[in-house]
Image 1 (tube, one colour):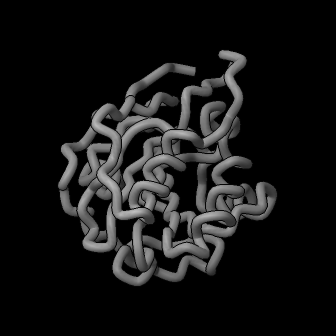
Image 2 (cartoon, helix red, strand yellow):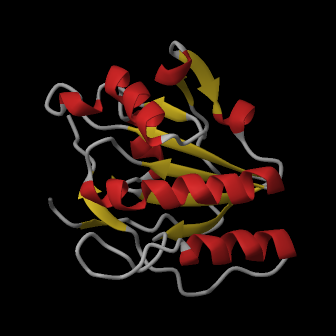
Image 3 (cartoon, one colour):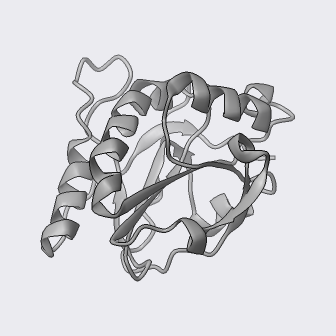
Length: 185
Protein backbone atom coordinates (compact mmCIF):
# COMPACT_ATOMS: atom_id res chain seq x y z
CA UNK A 1 0.00 0.00 0.00
CA UNK A 2 1.62 3.25 -1.10
CA UNK A 3 0.28 6.48 0.33
CA UNK A 4 -0.42 9.04 -2.40
CA UNK A 5 -2.06 12.43 -1.84
CA UNK A 6 -4.59 14.00 -4.19
CA UNK A 7 -3.25 16.84 -6.32
CA UNK A 8 -5.96 19.35 -5.32
CA UNK A 9 -7.37 20.49 -8.67
CA UNK A 10 -8.02 24.28 -8.52
CA UNK A 11 -11.42 25.26 -7.13
CA UNK A 12 -13.75 26.63 -9.80
CA UNK A 13 -12.49 24.14 -12.41
CA UNK A 14 -15.30 22.89 -14.66
CA UNK A 15 -15.96 19.17 -14.44
CA UNK A 16 -14.39 17.49 -17.46
CA UNK A 17 -16.98 15.82 -19.69
CA UNK A 18 -16.92 12.05 -19.82
CA UNK A 19 -18.84 9.11 -21.18
CA UNK A 20 -17.92 5.74 -19.72
CA UNK A 21 -19.35 2.22 -19.56
CA UNK A 22 -21.11 1.04 -16.43
CA UNK A 23 -20.21 -2.64 -15.88
CA UNK A 24 -23.19 -3.13 -13.54
CA UNK A 25 -25.55 -2.05 -16.34
CA UNK A 26 -24.24 -4.35 -19.10
CA UNK A 27 -21.61 -1.71 -20.01
CA UNK A 28 -24.24 0.89 -20.87
CA UNK A 29 -22.38 4.12 -21.64
CA UNK A 30 -23.27 6.86 -19.19
CA UNK A 31 -22.22 10.51 -19.32
CA UNK A 32 -21.58 13.17 -16.73
CA UNK A 33 -24.51 15.12 -18.18
CA UNK A 34 -26.84 12.12 -17.75
CA UNK A 35 -25.75 11.37 -14.20
CA UNK A 36 -25.08 14.77 -12.60
CA UNK A 37 -27.08 15.74 -9.55
CA UNK A 38 -29.67 18.49 -9.45
CA UNK A 39 -27.72 20.37 -6.76
CA UNK A 40 -24.28 18.79 -6.76
CA UNK A 41 -22.17 15.93 -8.05
CA UNK A 42 -19.45 14.02 -6.21
CA UNK A 43 -17.00 12.24 -8.52
CA UNK A 44 -14.98 9.56 -6.73
CA UNK A 45 -11.97 7.83 -8.24
CA UNK A 46 -11.76 4.44 -6.56
CA UNK A 47 -11.06 0.77 -7.18
CA UNK A 48 -12.03 -2.60 -5.77
CA UNK A 49 -8.92 -3.65 -3.89
CA UNK A 50 -7.48 -0.48 -2.30
CA UNK A 51 -7.45 -0.67 1.53
CA UNK A 52 -8.25 3.06 1.69
CA UNK A 53 -11.40 2.53 -0.41
CA UNK A 54 -12.38 -0.59 1.50
CA UNK A 55 -12.14 1.34 4.77
CA UNK A 56 -14.67 4.00 3.63
CA UNK A 57 -17.02 2.24 1.19
CA UNK A 58 -19.71 1.55 3.80
CA UNK A 59 -19.74 5.20 4.88
CA UNK A 60 -19.85 6.33 1.24
CA UNK A 61 -22.89 4.13 0.65
CA UNK A 62 -24.54 5.63 3.74
CA UNK A 63 -23.74 9.19 2.65
CA UNK A 64 -25.28 8.46 -0.74
CA UNK A 65 -28.45 7.23 0.94
CA UNK A 66 -28.55 10.45 2.99
CA UNK A 67 -27.65 13.00 0.32
CA UNK A 68 -28.79 11.39 -2.94
CA UNK A 69 -32.36 12.24 -2.07
CA UNK A 70 -31.28 15.87 -1.55
CA UNK A 71 -30.08 16.32 -5.13
CA UNK A 72 -26.45 15.27 -4.69
CA UNK A 73 -25.37 12.49 -7.05
CA UNK A 74 -22.29 10.32 -6.57
CA UNK A 75 -20.37 8.89 -9.55
CA UNK A 76 -17.53 6.45 -8.91
CA UNK A 77 -14.88 5.77 -11.55
CA UNK A 78 -12.20 3.10 -11.68
CA UNK A 79 -9.20 3.99 -13.85
CA UNK A 80 -6.72 1.33 -12.75
CA UNK A 81 -4.68 -0.68 -15.24
CA UNK A 82 -6.55 -4.01 -15.22
CA UNK A 83 -3.81 -5.85 -17.09
CA UNK A 84 -1.58 -5.48 -14.04
CA UNK A 85 -4.45 -5.40 -11.50
CA UNK A 86 -7.09 -7.87 -12.78
CA UNK A 87 -9.01 -7.57 -9.49
CA UNK A 88 -10.15 -4.16 -10.81
CA UNK A 89 -11.59 -5.52 -14.09
CA UNK A 90 -15.08 -4.42 -15.15
CA UNK A 91 -16.49 -7.84 -14.21
CA UNK A 92 -14.94 -7.54 -10.74
CA UNK A 93 -16.27 -3.95 -10.47
CA UNK A 94 -19.83 -5.20 -10.97
CA UNK A 95 -19.25 -7.93 -8.36
CA UNK A 96 -17.73 -5.42 -5.93
CA UNK A 97 -20.69 -3.07 -6.31
CA UNK A 98 -23.15 -5.88 -5.71
CA UNK A 99 -21.17 -7.29 -2.74
CA UNK A 100 -20.76 -3.87 -1.10
CA UNK A 101 -24.33 -2.81 -1.87
CA UNK A 102 -23.69 0.77 -2.94
CA UNK A 103 -26.24 2.22 -5.35
CA UNK A 104 -24.33 5.02 -7.08
CA UNK A 105 -22.93 4.42 -10.59
CA UNK A 106 -19.47 2.82 -10.82
CA UNK A 107 -17.94 3.49 -14.24
CA UNK A 108 -14.86 2.07 -15.98
CA UNK A 109 -12.20 4.41 -17.43
CA UNK A 110 -10.17 1.92 -19.49
CA UNK A 111 -8.17 4.58 -21.34
CA UNK A 112 -7.44 6.46 -18.09
CA UNK A 113 -8.23 9.69 -19.97
CA UNK A 114 -10.92 10.71 -17.47
CA UNK A 115 -8.57 10.29 -14.50
CA UNK A 116 -5.99 12.38 -16.34
CA UNK A 117 -8.58 15.07 -17.18
CA UNK A 118 -9.47 15.33 -13.46
CA UNK A 119 -5.79 15.15 -12.45
CA UNK A 120 -6.80 12.29 -10.15
CA UNK A 121 -3.92 10.71 -8.27
CA UNK A 122 -5.20 8.27 -5.66
CA UNK A 123 -8.02 6.01 -4.60
CA UNK A 124 -10.20 7.36 -3.20
CA UNK A 125 -9.91 10.83 -4.75
CA UNK A 126 -12.97 13.08 -4.29
CA UNK A 127 -14.16 15.97 -6.50
CA UNK A 128 -17.39 17.79 -5.56
CA UNK A 129 -19.10 20.05 -8.10
CA UNK A 130 -22.06 22.40 -7.77
CA UNK A 131 -25.12 22.43 -10.05
CA UNK A 132 -23.12 24.31 -12.73
CA UNK A 133 -20.39 21.62 -12.53
CA UNK A 134 -17.88 24.06 -10.99
CA UNK A 135 -15.49 22.42 -8.52
CA UNK A 136 -16.29 23.54 -4.97
CA UNK A 137 -14.53 20.88 -2.90
CA UNK A 138 -11.73 18.42 -3.46
CA UNK A 139 -9.85 16.46 -0.88
CA UNK A 140 -10.40 13.95 1.85
CA UNK A 141 -13.57 12.32 3.07
CA UNK A 142 -12.44 12.66 6.70
CA UNK A 143 -9.32 12.19 8.85
CA UNK A 144 -9.58 8.38 8.95
CA UNK A 145 -6.97 6.21 7.27
CA UNK A 146 -6.54 2.43 7.46
CA UNK A 147 -4.87 1.68 10.77
CA UNK A 148 -4.89 5.22 12.24
CA UNK A 149 -7.69 4.37 14.72
CA UNK A 150 -9.81 7.37 13.66
CA UNK A 151 -13.48 6.72 13.05
CA UNK A 152 -14.77 6.86 9.47
CA UNK A 153 -17.33 9.67 9.63
CA UNK A 154 -17.34 11.36 6.22
CA UNK A 155 -17.10 14.67 8.10
CA UNK A 156 -15.27 16.69 5.43
CA UNK A 157 -17.70 15.61 2.70
CA UNK A 158 -20.70 16.18 4.98
CA UNK A 159 -19.53 19.74 5.65
CA UNK A 160 -19.15 20.34 1.89
CA UNK A 161 -22.61 18.87 1.19
CA UNK A 162 -24.29 20.84 3.98
CA UNK A 163 -22.60 24.09 2.91
CA UNK A 164 -23.84 23.59 -0.65
CA UNK A 165 -27.39 22.76 0.44
CA UNK A 166 -27.48 25.77 2.78
CA UNK A 167 -26.06 28.14 0.14
CA UNK A 168 -22.98 28.77 2.31
CA UNK A 169 -19.36 29.18 1.25
CA UNK A 170 -17.15 26.13 1.37
CA UNK A 171 -14.40 25.73 3.95
CA UNK A 172 -11.23 27.57 2.97
CA UNK A 173 -8.97 24.79 4.24
CA UNK A 174 -9.49 21.57 2.30
CA UNK A 175 -7.14 18.70 3.13
CA UNK A 176 -5.92 16.38 0.36
CA UNK A 177 -7.28 12.88 0.13
CA UNK A 178 -4.84 10.05 0.65
CA UNK A 179 -4.91 6.57 -0.79
CA UNK A 180 -3.22 4.12 -3.08
CA UNK A 181 -1.87 5.69 -6.24
CA UNK A 182 -3.90 5.11 -9.40
CA UNK A 183 -2.31 2.19 -11.26
CA UNK A 184 -1.25 3.84 -14.54
CA UNK A 185 -0.50 1.96 -17.75
